[in-house]
Image (cartoon, rainbow, N blue to C red; front, side, top):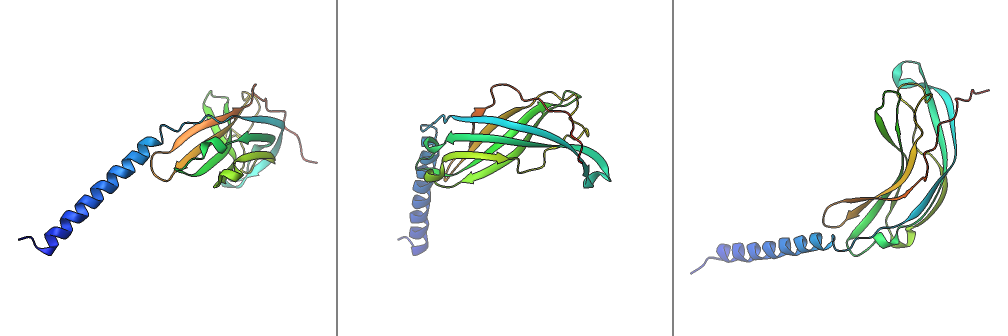
Length: 177
């Protein structure tokens, strides 16, 4: 009546259809579990020093060094569909031409709920420089603690856990002695 190949095809088609329906239900259920974690971000100091950008053929540029303090409880973001969190601190400012820039200055990956209580006194991990060569006449920067929830199944979700209450101005350039 039916060959073994036809029966195998029917069984595998039924199995894959049920599996896709289960994965779709898991992905949609992620929207039910929403959390709004809160944290605190404060900038201890910002220093600006001259430097030489190797990429631009001995062009002098200003480099900013930011010391910050972060405390946050991100454990509400972990549930059964959370694989890991990508946590980062970014600076948002407008340059002399009025172009809005957002620069990531620090990041960390959190893989377990036990590690989701973050308390860090750190410094920028990545180079923070202004492409127009100088931080002079640049608007003050807002610093934000943002996160990205990476699920096992479903869409990536983004959020903001903390923000500096007021923008932090860039100080005058300090000469190296």
